[in-house]
Every structure is written in structure tokens, then in C-alpha cells.
Image 1 (spheres, chains in turn orange, red):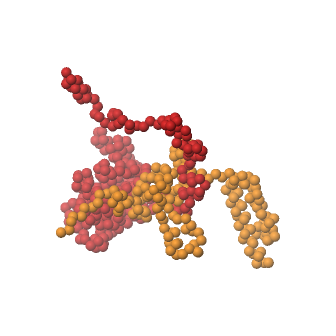
Image 2 (cartoon, rainbow over the protein chains, first blue to last red):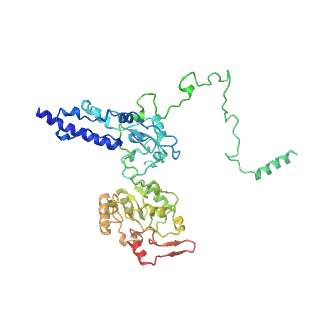
Image 3 (cartoon, chains in turn yellow, red):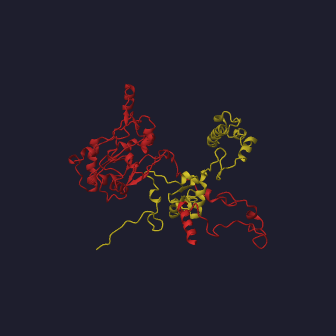
Length: 178
Length: 293
């Protein structure tokens, strides 16, 4: 019984912290109901449960959040096109126009995946041409201009001079050997 | 008298503007007007089909996949662009290009080369407002580099430093803040503004290490240390270090700017009057102290 009591204590403290945080975040006038949380026992938990989740104002706030993840063609203030933020969080554009991305499930259920599969998941892969065109449309012109960072880890991938079709520079001339 | 009509036409043509894309007529059939035909000429549903997106012209928003988890939301986050707005950019200039500039007299190698002389070629641009901070001299053409130059760039790799020094030249890496760069990218325009030349600011904390490193030939490094590192680098890359102390261009090769100076031969605080071809220097002691500090 004592052990159980000790187990519960930190949980109660956590709830109290969470409620405080929520109140600060949403500016809703809801006070946490937990009093003297350090002395509350296991039986008191149900009584001192915060009523935040059942609060109608919080429920209405939670239900009316509309995620704005779509492209804005004309902004309200300046009439400018806006980038989709989430594209820039998930994808990276190379200077030649290709996009790279991570792989799905690279952080999920790693315990049951083989080491070779985990290695494949760690890799970053290219998007295809259709997807790259779509992503180009979803970001602004700033993201489509080349960036000249020094010590850029993606530096070798920004040009494709190793393929004859995609190379931009003339091939170096090597005189025939005698 | 048909020839006279032809003569007249030719005479007329002499005074008409030259034929160009702006004043010629399209080829017949090049422009196809959109028609909304009736009956057998594409009538009925006019190609939009019966019911659905096509008929109602409700074009789907970008990336929407009619209820699928969209492609652009499917993958985990990765901080690819983290801190991009703070990272400094240095547009590249290769050693091959630099050699071409020197050999085609775009750049005068008998004077110290800095960002101003590279910008004056008109073949290289930087945009300080796009967070670009100057020249990154890249190693392309390093094997063939033969010019003896005293060059000041904003970023250079070890190989580039080695190839410049192997050719008998010297290289410095120097930092310019955005106001200095704005003065340097178009000097004529800057002098016409009639404002005093600003003093160059010190590099930001994350760059000060680079610009005071003798291995990187930083402009804030100790010259003694730099001459030591020149020898070390020559031994690392296996070439005989040209002795610049006995070179006839010794003064040219060792000329450096003051860390506060932007233009060769001009001090901060001076005003260049291009119209009267005079230079105005500050007389006030406070101003002198300000520009010297």
C-alpha cells in the first residue's frame, strides 16, 4: 500500500504541472483544482482531477483548430504567395531541382526491424519528378534559389555533372595518350 | 513600271524598323482560338464529362490526395533548413575563373586583388541583402593555376591556399560586414552618395575563429604564424615554397589592408568627391579617434 502511494505521488505532481502549462498557453480562465498536491493520497486523485478536458471552452478550442498546411496563393496583407511550412520541415531541395526526404517509420518499432532495414530507414531518398514539381509549387521563390553555404553537408549533391545528360560544365579535355 | 513599285517598297523598307519577334505576324494556324463548339463540334458536355470534379471545375488544392495521407505530410520531420536565415553564404569563384580574369586583363594582377577588383570585372556578383558575404575561392582548376597574385577572399579551402602559394602568390581571408560589402559592390555608386567610408566591423563570434586562424590565412592572424604555416602547408602538399622575401614584387605580395579598412589606399572616415576629384579627410579629433578604433 505504501509502495503504491509512493508510485502515485509523481503522477499527481505531473498533472498539476500540466494544468498550469495549459492555462498559460491558452489564456483561458480556468484554475487548477489540485490543492496541496504533495499531501494528496491515492484516494484523492479522482476527486482532484482537473476539469480542463471537460471544460466546454477548451473543448470548443480544441475542436475548432484548423491546421493551415496548404499553400496560400494570395496572402491577406500583401497578396503574396506563401510557402507551406510543413514541406520545408520534411523535405530539402537540391540546387538542380531535386528534392530529398526521410523515410516513413524510421523512428517507429525499431526493436522489431532488422539492422539492414534500419540502415535503409536512416537513408534519405529522392522524390520523383512529379513530386518535386508539386513541392516546387508549394514553396516560394526564396527556396528555389541556390544557396552558397560553405561546409554544406549536401554540397556534392547540388550539381549533377557526373552524368553527361545533366552536366552543365563542358567536359575537361584530356589529350590522347601516345 | 513594276520595278519602280519594288524600288518604292525597298525604299520604304529601308526606313522601317528591323524585323524582329515583336513586329512579325504569327504563322497561319499558330494561334488556336478557344471555341465552345456546338453539337458535333465538341458540344454536349464540352469535354468536361458527366458529373464530378471535371464538370464542377473544383480544382483540388496543391498536394491534396482526396482523403489519402498526402505525400507532403507523410514523412517525419528533419531539420534540413534549421538556422538557414543565420548562415552566411559565400558565392563561389573558382581558381580557373580567376586565372581567366587575370589572363584576359579583367583583373590587374600587378595590384592586390580584393572583392572590389573582382566585382569590377562585372563577371561576379554578390547580394549582401541575400546574406552573401563575399568570395569563396574554390579549388576547381587548382592543378593548372599559374598566376602570381596577392589575393584577398572571404573563404578559401586548404587546397586553394596551397595552389595560390605554390604559384608564388599570397592569399588572405578577410571578413567584411554588410555595410562594407554594400560600399564595395558598386564603388562609384557609393562614392556618389557622398557619405564617409565606413569602418569595417569585426567578424561575428562564430567567424572570429576562422579569420584569426593562421592555417586559414585569416586577416587577424599573427603574420609570423602565417609565414610558419606557409612552410608547413608546402611540406604537406610537397612543393617548394617560393621565397617571396627575395621576390621583386615583395611589397605587392605583402600589402595588406588594416582590419578597419575597406578600400586599398582609402581610410575609413574619408569622403571621396568624384566630381572635383578630391578626398575630404576628417579633422575633428573625436572623429579621427572613432575611425581609428
